Length: 129
Image (cartoon, rainbow, N blue to C red; front, side):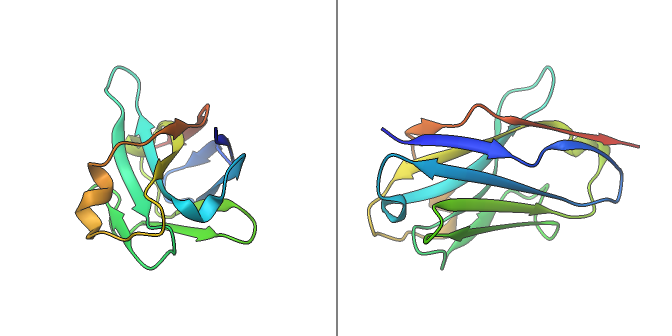
């Protein structure tokens, strides 16, 4: 069992930045690829970004590409999502998720399609225009 706890959400203005963190515990962190998903009011949850177990491969959904950066610190069992140039349409609950890939890496797009086994409780990001 892996426990994931997100933090760093909040209310910001359009153009501002936020950095989300997700602390993992319970299993060997480096055995997992990590992803960030988001769910806006009235919409389905969607993929935002993912990172391989080593951090060498990242992949982003088109709406966030060039503005968001995912990273991880395996020594601290933490994954981050740096969000810059925020827009009103980025308003959503952001969820951290873990996929048990072992120490294997895949082409980037794969990380948007694999099954994520564990999820955090989410953190609210609200961007005012």
